[in-house]
Amino acid sequence: MRSSNPIFSRWGAARDAGAADAYAQRPVGAAVGGHPTDDFATNPYAPGADTSSRSDGAAVTMDDVIVRTGTTLATVVLTAVLSWLLLPVDAANLGRSYGIAVGAALVAFVLSLVQAFRRTPSPALILGYAAFEGVFLGVLSSTISTYIAPGVVVQAVLGTFAVSAGVLIAYRMRWIRVTQRFTGFVAAAATGFVLLLVADLLFSAFGAGNGLGFHSGGLGILFGVVGILLGAAFLAMDFKQVEDAVAYGAPREEAWLAAFGLTMTLVWIYLEVLQVLTIFNSDN
Image 1 (cartoon, rainbow, N blue to C red):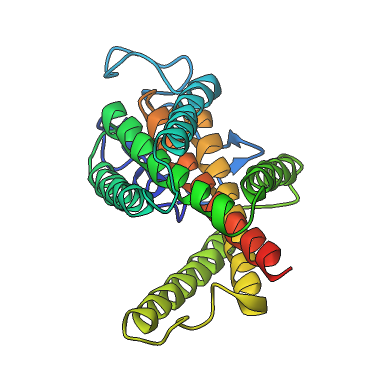
Image 2 (cartoon, helix red, strand yellow):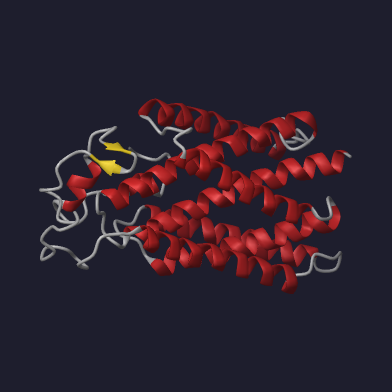
């Protein structure tokens, strides 16, 4: 099952001959409850298989994914807190802080693209992305908390945790089943969502004021809720991808790609929750 997350979609892409093919070309629905039903005999990363052909002699485990995801998220949080404290958003410094934040966002975007098109994960690129993303989030959150909706950042963080925990519980209880139809629906919805965002930016850039109105009022809240639901769907697909990677014995280095993809999804959810809460608090 391929995830719509651009990072997870590259898992198993012709790496480590034989292992990648066995992992990436497995049939949809071959794993039930996280346990593959096909034969591991052709997969050199399978438990108990001959490890002589492995690049690092080990297969990914859930602990690997947890540790690397925790490291990546901790980097985001640390740089966000430092940027909040060291890049003031008062009237005298707002322009400078905004400039740094926009620059950091662009660097994070470039690093994410570079990693997305690499054949192997690079911890340096992934942690670099996390660091610059944290700077952007720190300044943005500080600005919103200072000028628009005081206290909303804590609510957004708690909301992100709540959404993530809810998706994890629903996924583990099999209330959410990531099927081919589910994946296709989410991909189509995400495409429409992104196209609307681009249209909104174009309208704003060419003098339409508030664009299409997706950042204020009831329409803004509705659009943000749709974004949260899409983020939750991405997260379920990411969980499925991680579960399959562990079950099929993917290379240990794939844990860094898991951390990268999960971080991107959680940042998405945080931004959408922050938008919804900001609009709601500012309207009241």
